[in-house]
Length: 245
Image (cartoon, rainbow, N blue to C red):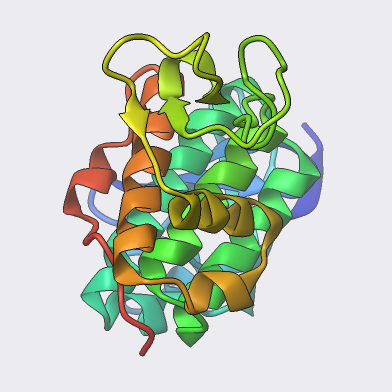
């Protein structure tokens, strides 16, 4: 059976036996991969620390029948330590890798890999509020998987905006004629934050009010939970607005 190399993000790990781990990886070229890392829980392991959640590595794998086998691993991004030292970064990172795991079941692309790497890097450096990094990641990752929210035109009928109703079930912002009775109404500042998160306009995100960013976070969460069948459990542990640290 052939071996292959790829760059990966470690999404999840599970103990196997006394010294091994099963890894769930999002790779740059091979989509989602499940592999066994033998002996990594031993203190003498050569690459155990390189195969922890939130780490980015260059790995060589042996193609197995059901699970591939990790033969070599070289660190490309050691983000784990800086993330786990801060609760807001840690919970946001967990929500990001859980979303990546879910989204890669249906669609795994190189763009998804780089988006996740960039998000984890930004979290580890504390470049922006942790929740804002998560919200931006979720919107972009959903868009890459074909679930881009409508933020300008009506998501249902295409009527030009601006609109002030957001309905996750209908795909985003909707006009007054399409909005169901009791739909959430959002103000202009919240709509600006949503568009900034989607486009990566961090100046607008970083200077927005707490009220606008918290409202935007709630809408992003509702949108992601609705479109992902089983939802994202880690979102329940994420604070409404992580701090820059």
